[in-house]
Length: 131
Image 1 (cartoon, helix red, strand yellow):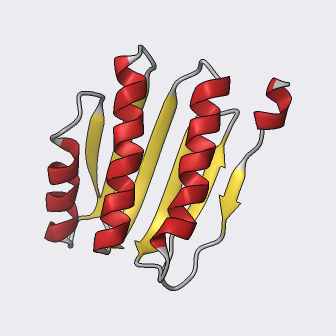
Image 2: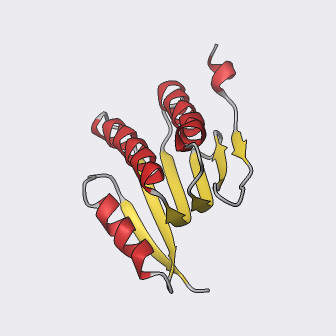
Image 3: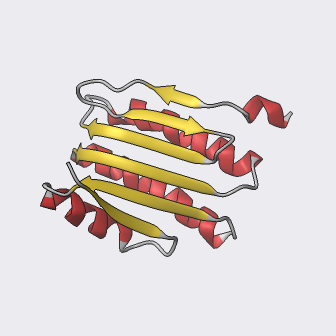
């Protein structure tokens, strides 16, 4: 029964949405690019569903590895929902973490990472990427 959950999620990037790779075996969700899709709910619902399945079916740790150059307001709201789910998992004893990668030339990206990370108790690492 658990095998039905063992799946990876891959979403190709577009001009307005990030690439997403959710790797079940590695326990990693990677998102790269910009996030201002016309329908953020449609994009993030798939990621939230995958996350819920993973947290329910796998006892392993999970890392959210982000390199998002820009997020619109609805993407930020979706990201907060992802982080809230990670926080709940952490409070229930799950090892979870976030890596927030940002372009060193983009001060707004580091500010956003700091703002988002301050509300959570799980490890939230902010790393500059040199262009």
